[in-house]
Image 1 (spheres, rainbow, N blue to C red):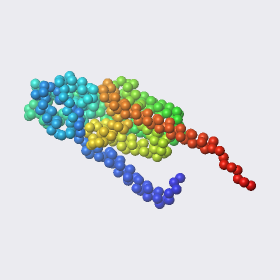
Image 2 (image 1 turned 60 degrees about the vertical axis):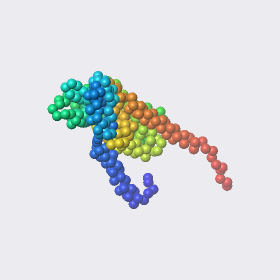
Image 3 (image 1 turned 90 degrees about the horizontal axis):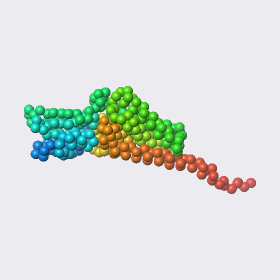
Image 4 (image 1 turned 30 degrees about the vertical axis):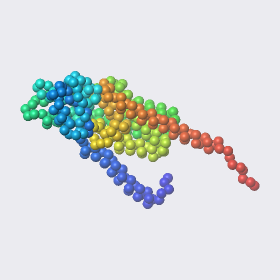
Length: 330
């Protein structure tokens, strides 16, 4: 029980709750209110003479787009499928052709179409093609974005339960890994087999769900093992109140204000959403970076769990083996 007086505890509650609310509103509302492209990767394909005006159109908004140059439409399509760019504009004798990937981000696909249409000469017909589209079961791509928060909550719950139940060492690692694996299978069964909102390899999707959940659970449990119960709150704040709104899964990391998008991709929710999108829609294209990020979080978290458990088990042993002092005289 806290030794602080009731008055101090009352003041602490009165000050802490508004501070948490202010932080949450900043983390969620600030990115949503400042959506705009920042070095958004797009492509331009075709002969140099005809492609130059398109490049200048994108470069006119300084810092908004990162333009990649491709020799032809086939190269641009491959770059979209590899998640190098979100979309591309191809010059054709009939006019510009816009290649999009709504599976990468429906918001960016619409932004690219609108941007090219605004810069096209009057009367020019604008052809569009969705190279990698979202599944019929999730035409707006909202289901994948909605999966990030449940995964974060599952990981936080796993880490908190392992700590609350007093599991240490190898038992805690087995519990966290087993819970994450079952979450992965369950989530894939719901989103792929039942709802049909994912379109990739079943076990690859299950692996992405598993790794994302394990990264969060291991992080929360590791912080709790090192810092005590306060580590659970710190982990929840890092993952839910910061990682979730900074993930960019509902839009794109490059649309968030800087450096929110970059920070979000370093945290488990953002990396987990990117990995799931890659394996669900792009046959693993662009999955390397997010998978490495999640693996680092999971490994470091599990190491912290083992170190914290070892410290707590050796401390009582040292106390018990400490030689007793001399007996009192008399």
